[in-house]
Picture 1 (cartoon, one colour):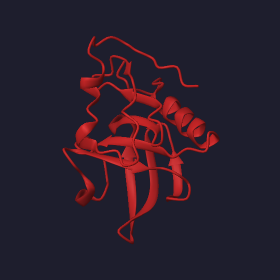
Picture 2 (tube, helix red, strand yellow):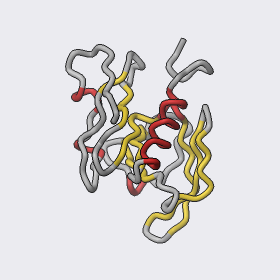
Picture 3 (cartoon, helix red, strand yellow):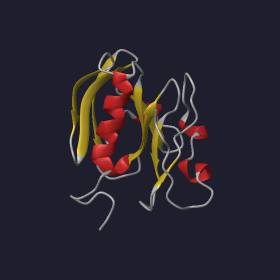
Picture 4 (cartoon, helix red, strand yellow):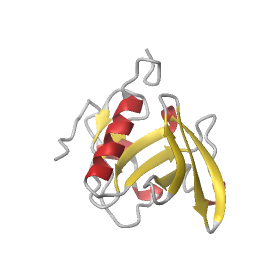
Length: 143
């Protein structure tokens, strides 16, 4: 069974971290692998094949967190864009302010710690493969 098959926990984990982040008064963000088929994002904001997107309700419109896709509209430099993100393209979901969340390993073999906290995350310095050095499943307790 692939990670994104109908029985996958990934879309549920994405929604759970999204909800938790908002409940804590934080800003939910996702890191997306733009090389995955079906990803529709403004390519001018992509760095190293990745893009970090703010999902806070004040930043997006019409957010749909489905089991197969995330869909929403957002403004980039004042220009409205419609974004479509297949769940399989989501590399991480976390709070911008403290980095708490989940980084999904590319091969679907488990979870690794979230990207480092920072005011302006940069996809170039958030490599999920470098975070988990033992390549085994790892869960982080989110308080």
